[in-house]
Image 1 (cartoon, one colour):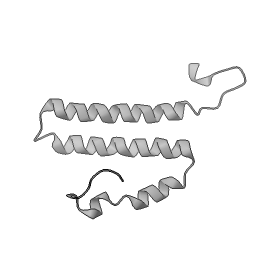
Image 2: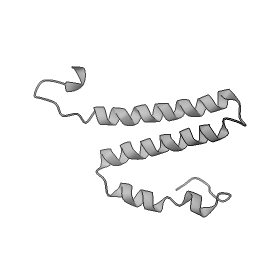
Image 3: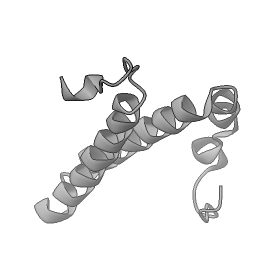
Image 4: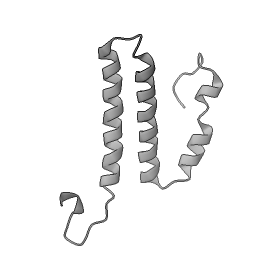
Length: 91
């Protein structure tokens, strides 16, 4: 990771197993799952900060998580099979 983690315990930031598992997946699935995991981390952070931070800060994090989750879902929608000449997403 390129995020500075000097002040975070190594057992919390060691994502090597998760990254190794993701690396074995096809690209679109890898991207979708990574985005969904990131959204879950953001939701977790929002939940944990809810008692100590302003509602505006918490809602901003929740909004980020929702946007990330929506983007991941669009990846799924964009991979729907189509019949010749028909876009199944428009049905």
